[in-house]
Structures are given as C-alpha cells and as structure tokens.
Length: 342
Image 1 (cartoon, rainbow, N blue to C red):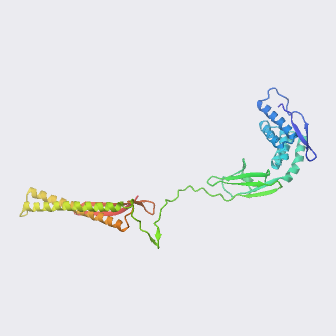
Image 2 (image 1 turned 135 degrees about the horizontal axis):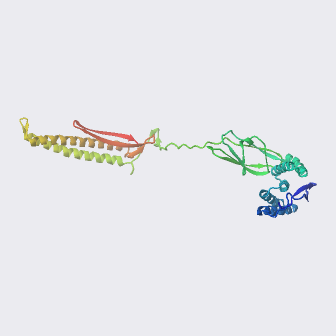
C-alpha cells in the first residue's frame, strides 16, 4: 500500500488537526490500479474535509474504504459522518475502528475511537420495529436486509427519512416511510398483519334478473332471444306438413291394400301395400308429434315474452340447452322435450 494514513484528533468543539502516523505497509512497486484510485480518493477527501466541505468529502472516504479498506480511512470516514450529523453511521464506524485498533495493538487509534463513541451513544436516535409472527418474514430498512431477530430491538438510524419494507411468501408486501428526528430517542414502527394473497379463482359471475315488486321480471323479446320461438314455430309447421303428407300416403296405401285383399287373402302387391301403410302411418304419427312439440316450445317462449336465449347459463354457472328428441318404435312414436346442463 503506497498511501499514508492519517487519523484525526479533535481540538476544542470544531477544529481538526491532522497528524501523520506513518505508512501502514511498505511502499510497493507493484501497486494495483485499484489501490491508486483509493489513494487519490483518500487524499482528495482529506483536502475537502480540511476545507470544511463535509458533504463532498464523505462519499470519497466511503469509496476509498470500499476499494482498499484501511483503519486510517475508516477513522476519517467515521469523523466525516459525525460532522455530517449521521450519528448512527459514525457510531458504527467508530465501533469497528476501535475493535480493529485493539486487535492490531494500535492503542492511540483505539483511544481516539473510544473518545468519540461515548458522546455519540448519547445522541443516537433509534427505530423500534414491531411485526407479527409470520414464517419467512423479510424486513428491509432502506437497502439493508434485517433478520427477524431485529424485531423488538432498538436499531440506531441516521436522522432523516428511511423506508421500511416487509414481505413474506404468500402475503401482500407492506412498506412505510419513517422520519428519524435529530434528537436522541426511539421511534416505534408497528407492522400490521399482512394480508394473504388469494390465489383461488373467483366464482363465475351471474347476472340476476331485475326484480320489480318482489317478482322476477320476465325477459323481453329481442334480436338475440327470439330464436327458440321461431325454431319452435318452424318445427311445428314442418311436423304438421310431414304428418299430413305421410298420413295421406298411409290412407292411399291402406285403400290399395283393401282392393288387393279379398276373403282374407292378399296378393303380393296387397302385402306390400299393407307394409307401406304401416310405415307411412308411423312416419305421419312422428311428424304430428314433432309438430306438436314444436308448437309447445313456441308457445312456451311466446308466453315468456319473446323467448329466451337458445343456450343460457343456469344459476350453477353451467350451460343450459333445450333439446327435442323423437323416439320411434314398432308400437308408436314419442317426442321428448327437455333441457341439459353442460
């Protein structure tokens, strides 16, 4: 290390005297570029501090210490922060410097740090955090992360504004801004119970029918909800037409069979007419049943005020669909009208 280290002695209340105490390590010809940068920052910061330009000097001391840590630079940084009014930072740095000096048997520097620690401890402003017991709780004060063990312990902070943020997996994050006063004392911050994050999907939304006078208002006819009425009417018309046509064919086939059958004996043609008459009669019956079903559907939706949507959402959130199912058997035909949920 090539740069000399100095430490600061206070004379009176506001004067500083800088005295050289030697070189921490012998000069080396192979000094790195980082060490040279740290040396330049340190020398510039000393000149700024002597000129009482504290706000400009402190960041340079801090950067020099980050690049090439040294006890002398740490003492200067602590002194600069003390003059700047950052009592918590200065107290922490003087504490570290005292421990460093004691480990390395630098009694004069250790005594210098102790002389500053006593008045700083009397000026400290603290924040006292109160937080609920939540597994995996993370606490941040500005850019520093605190452990849960810090909850309930007075923590020294520099006077001014600070941001406190709390988060935990499965909960909504929370943050606040607190102003720490210059006067010594303790500011309490209580973290509220965090709100759990709701991951379940909301239930399907349903739109209830408007209520007037305690009764549900029937839906009005419109372009989209009149389809079932017209479908029912069309099915009814088609069923009646088909039933009439095949009914006529059944009557004709029956008359033809009667002519071809005498004395309970029928020709091949007569037997064929009998089979055709049965088939036509069955189809005619199905046609009339379909027509009747269509008429019932059309009448139902007409009474409701123009019909409802062909496929609607029931109160359960499922899709409700109307169905018309014909069933034909040798004994007759049945038309079934119903709904199904999908």
